[in-house]
Length: 79
Image (cartoon, rainbow, N blue to C red; front, side):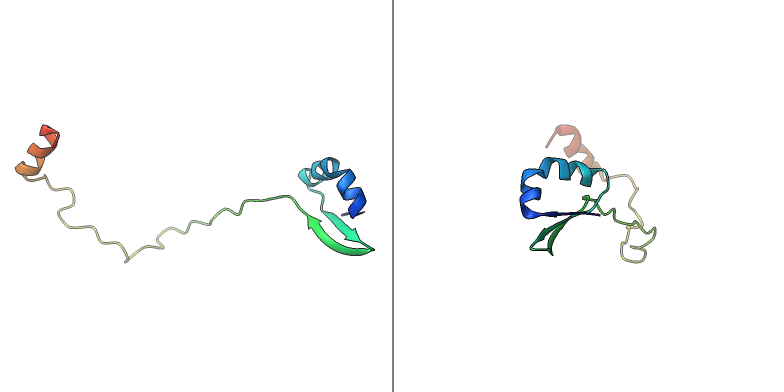
């Protein structure tokens, strides 16, 4: 962890961001008191749990049955 004062952080922000990008935490202090912390930004990936919607979605029994002729005609006519 790197600790810098506000003046040093302002003067060397680009260098400090490079250090953060390399995985280093940077603490910005004012008067020897920690004020802020720069840390690498990490996107939290959502954990996908198989089956979490089980019982909540219903598929009709005739889901894959042929469509009625009038609906098929509409598709073919471009309506």
